[in-house]
Image (cartoon, rainbow, N blue to C red; front, top):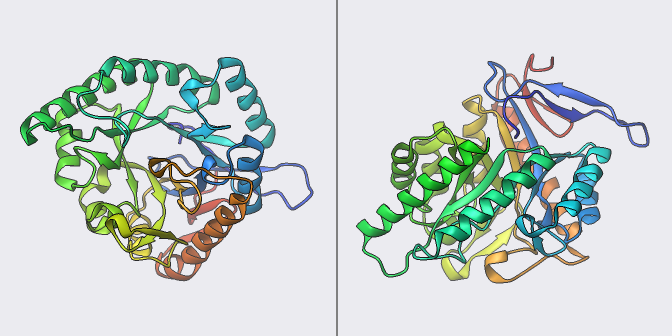
Length: 328
């Protein structure tokens, strides 16, 4: 999602030249939801990522890594070529996933490293036409709860200040870190930082491995949610196994239906974790595209069977959903 600009979906018949259809932007009185995915969940290389989206008829791509390298590490000439490829394919970048505050970091790590990554991402985001950066809020490193909170808030405040000056919005994900697994802490985070450059990213499946009810969390934080990750899982904790959307215990359908009921606008980004799980050292290979596509089709089926029949005024369009009258 790139701010208030009107959004588009593909209405191109197979084999015909690309044709796009404009949807009203987030924040409009009429709502639209676009479907996309985190590219490296499907393939390590950009062509594979785009092929997976193409099979699903989607045009929204969230970038985390390309060819095994995090976006902040890619040379600028490579990022420019990626931007050119995406423009030629009619693909929009909805955000960049950073390492800031994630599962591989600790609250006591050097903040300068994260400030440098954010600065690098600001340049790359501008080239790629997005303004959204995914962050987390730092796993603990033996600090007291009070010190952990204080340091997390200090860090996210500094990062949000830099993001605001760079024209970026940080999206805090309910994953690793101080505010990751608790709605009360997420609300504390956004209230304490008190910046338009910090909003929330809701991952519908993270409650299963982290031990909370994601649907109940969403109900409390929804007013601050700007982006959604879609996954599903069974088990819990170290026994977590990721499954096709709608076949797990994450209450995914309830969460997505709740968003639709509220007239929420934005992107639903597929992150199925079937082949790619960076926190476990797993990366997609050449066989992962089929799993990603199967997950995308499962999401579409879930929406058709369990959301749209109960969503007055909403209907499917190529690449997403819109509420009646949402085309401009």
